Image 1 (cartoon, rainbow, N blue to C red):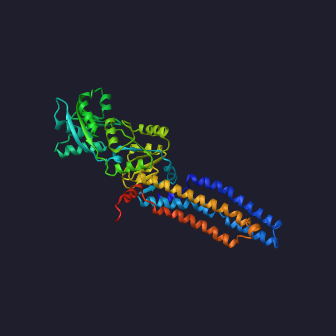
Image 2: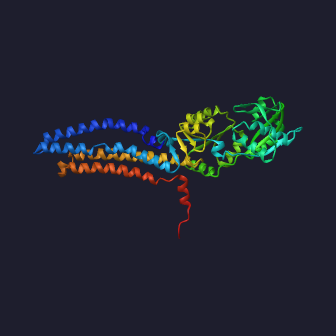
Length: 431
């Protein structure tokens, strides 16, 4: 993937190609004009002066440095990114990331560990805790969602026997249902219960408390009656707060897109200092959320890890997949964060800015250098000071411009992530 990115052309290279397309004929014309002027107006031997100066113009203007300016920076930048755990699958992402105005993140598995645990189980009147948890766990055994695994694991830890189920069905974006010993069991979000015509207000106080604590509440219905509210907590990754702070330091807005209920999402956003929350989003709604944020803020980068994040990763201007996520998310993304956390996001954006800045420095040097020395090679200093630029020195100067461009690109090898740079600047200095 790194090799493919290194061999790709960035959008800025198209501009270089256009300029070079006009630059080369212009230099040929300048060399021809130099030859004619020296041949007609130059001192004797006029032909010798004309040939030497025309050749000097051609040599000094050789666009080697222009050709090297972009690919060398791309190679060094993507290579340094790989060393830091950021794989650019597509070269253009290296340029597009620098223009990002907002970073949108999925919650589960991206901001959080993706390993939730059961924390609360409040039972409605007429139901028994063990029986309810056993039936809920039975339905959740067929689900691959991390929350489902947390419930099944909790039932196992309590030694509760899990009955067999039939007619399992996953209701996308709402929950799951199945028959346990012929009895209908439905487990899911509050919107699922409302869809079933059940009133969740009986658990309103519990739901408010759990949401404010950053826990995800789910509801269970047994035999068509609301039986329990279940809460799971997914711990925030220890690296997430520093990554969010680094993104803010880079001048970016951070938004969270999640299917979780709004109260829980906003509680987590407050903990992390996230600027905007789009909650209770169905899987297909993530793409619409990405489009909405792009329309409001401009260029957008989206970070996700799950199957339901893949469309949003493809829709974003730049999609970044957490390396520990699903294969389909990685395949849909432009950048892969091998660290499995958000620390790579500020690194990728800062590296993009550094690389494009490096390319611009290279291009300025290459164009300015060549353009400034063409008149000298043509002999404009000769009438006043009798100075001419020998083709030998012109060749040396041309080579020096290429060396400068390569040397400047290699400076990217010393790039450090914003978080590393912040840590080192905070270290106490020796007395």
